[in-house]
Image 1: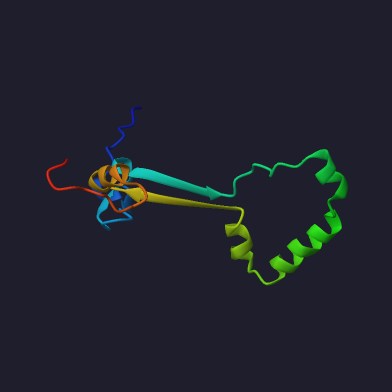
Image 2 (image 1 turned 180 degrees about the vertical axis):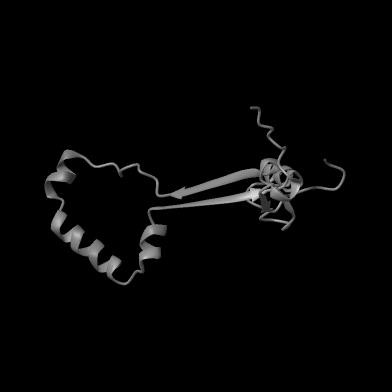
Length: 111
């Protein structure tokens, strides 16, 4: 007994939308952009004298006071946030050329 496996119907292809131009495209033809925004983990410089005189309890109280007025999203944003977007090929090229969307200083006659 042999089974035949039909090729997937085009209508069954999973579709996604480009986050920039909103064009529908097959998921396999999209590009994934992941952005991680997080606080720099580098500790400030401290000498052993600084550590011996540092008031940890006072510092923790101050942090707790600052956090008390913040939402859960605000607290998370101050530590880490991850974004994921799907792009079509055209928008992927534009994104790679200028990922932060910063203004470009172009002078006349220069490419």
